[in-house]
Every structure is written in structure tokens, then in C-alpha cells.
Length: 456
Image (tube, rainbow, N blue to C red; front, side):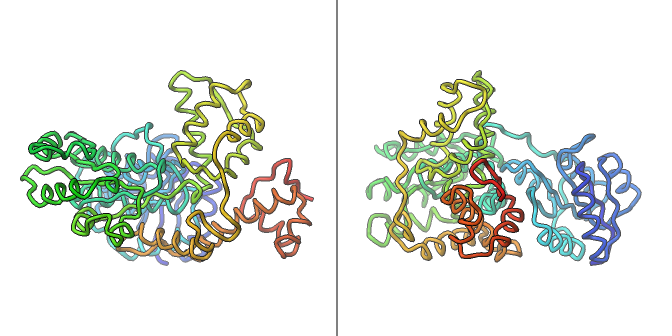
């Protein structure tokens, strides 16, 4: 790489790591913990690339993007942020950041993106004075896992298009929240947001009345897979005769519509009209690493709503992470809200979590077989295909092999440690690896050591 990189982050360790890595790659680096200093450098004409955190002691990296674009049109900015929410990704996309990465980021991945930024010009310049939208705390679309970050980017790309969107996922994953986010952060956000059930399409005037209510806004067909054949036909005819002020069409479903269509239970013409862009929402068990973030979000929301301030004991959190959550994010939120009310102390204990989960269904699949009855290898292939689909017409970020291995290796070691009672010698024997190798993996994967997992 060749060029000068301006690094702005209030974390000294991150500044040091980036400075060393970029310098070794052949770049000159100026690093600061001050947004004021960063802006001064930019005004002085320094830098071919900016890598900036969002929350700084004296400013906000996202809010500075329009100012940077006005002062230095074409200067690429890579945003890195510990605020792993859909709003951060959307704000970065709206302000035309060159790229966005959540913390903790993969250093080789960031270096590849920095190299591209130094050799490519930005495709567009934001309108002068454009400001990112304010964050919405009521959307529990948070997560740092690759699947959620890919979902954020896809939402950011499609929210201001007119393409129909099909949001798929199990019950409780947040499909309606994704639909709402697409509307609330789009150019149609001041127009109506209407959710339609099958009954709304009945009667001679049903479709026309529905379009009138959703005029120019967003019309969501909720759980479209449950609509009968007659209603599906009405929707097809309605979509084929949309007026000039037609709403954006979004449909949600927990059914496999492609499979249902092949079985004759869903109209092909409707499927193709609705699936302009398909957004799969991952199940909670597919993004276990996001559970602590979600738990923190829900506890904070409960406190804002007048509940008691609560935190979760480490061994209790391990129990929460190990649960399969068949009801997904909705079930997690409801469980935590009950615990906020019923917990006896500010710290929610393992016993209290165990009691709360004991009444919930959590039947594990047979060994090597997923909940759909397929082999484990087939289940992995299905999830990997979903991950690629989330990136639509682009490829996933580089470094996929190591990232996928890490996603699989971490839960395997955590579960093996639990099963062996924290005895690393037994765990290493169970896994068939050297004990020193196990120690190194625990360190490299940043696996939390609890009282049941003592380093020996």
C-alpha cells in the first residue's frame, strides 16, 4: 500500500495496532484521539484515507462525514464502531462512508479494505449538509456477528429503492422490525406504514382501500405464506395495477416459500413479484455471540420503562447463551423482562435463569441432525448459503475461511468445556487435541473462563 492514512480513535491500543500494521504495509500514518485534530489535518490537505471511530471525546465520526466530504470531496473514510446496531450501518451508508466495520474488527480484513480505499475513488459524494439520522433505541436489531452485519448492509442498500422486499426467518427473529427499519430510515418515512392481513384484501373495495391507506408509503403483507390461494390471486392483480402513488411492497414469512411454491401451496407469479430482494433474518441460535448484546439492550430498555436496574451474573449468562431459544429474540426479551421483575437481587443469578428457562421448551436435535431432520453437514451448508445470499450481488468480506472456522470452533470448545466440567485435560482429550493447543485456542478465541472453566 502507498499513501497517508489518518487514524482517529480514542482507544490507544487500536491506534497503536493500526499505526503499526499500516506502517508495515508501507503507509504513512497520523493517529489521534481528537476529532478536532483529525478535521484540522483534513483541512490542511493531509491524508489519502481516514479510518475513524464513531464516538470520540470531542465529536462524532458519523456526523463529521458530510464535513469531510465538503472539505475534501473524494477522500475515502472507513468507519469503525463498537455501536453494533443497524442504525450505525445505515448512518454510514447514508453519509457515503467508503466502508463500515464493527468492533472488534478483523485486522487483515480492515487492511484489505484500506488498500481498496487507497486505490479506488468513492462512487458518490453526499449532499452538502446531509446529516445522519438519529438512532432509534426501540429496534433490537443489534449484533456484531457476520450474519447481522451483512443484514445491516443489505437493509442500507435496499431501503431507498422501489424493489419489493421479502423478509424471511423464523418466528421471533425480528422480521417485522426489519420491515419497519426499511421504512423508517427510507425516503418514505414521512408516509404511512401499513401492515396488511389476509382479511384486508377481502371485499370488492378491499385492495383499493388498502392502497389508499398506504399511499406512497410502505405496505407490508405480514406472514404472506398464510394467505389462501384466493387472497394470493387478489394480491397479484393488485400489484399488476398499482397507481402512480403506489406504496413500497414488503412481505414477511416464516415459511419456505420456494418449497411451498413447488408443492403447489403458493403462487409462482406472486412469489416472483414479492422477491425482488430477499432478506433472510438469522435465528438467534445462529448468532449466539450476539446474545450478551441483546440482553444488555433489553435490560436497559426495561429500566427505561420503569423497571429495576439489573445485570446478569457471568454463570447465568453462560446458561442463557447455551439455551437454543426456539422463540428467538422475542422469547429472549420476554424472559429477561420477567427476570427483571422476579429477580431478588440487582444481579440475576444462575438459579433464577435456570428456573425461568426450565419452563420453556428446549428440546435439542439428535446428534448430528438439525431441527429439520437434516444431517449436520447439510445444516451447515444451508446456513453458509444463507450467509452468501445476504450479500446479494457482492461477495462476503475476505477472510471467510478463518471467520467461519472461528464461528464453529468457539461454540464447540465452549460446549466441550462445559461438558468436561472445566477440566482442560479432559476437554482436550474429548476434542482430540493437545492441551497446549486448547489453551491457545481459549486465549485466541477470547473464551470467557467461568468457575466451571478454570485454567489448569
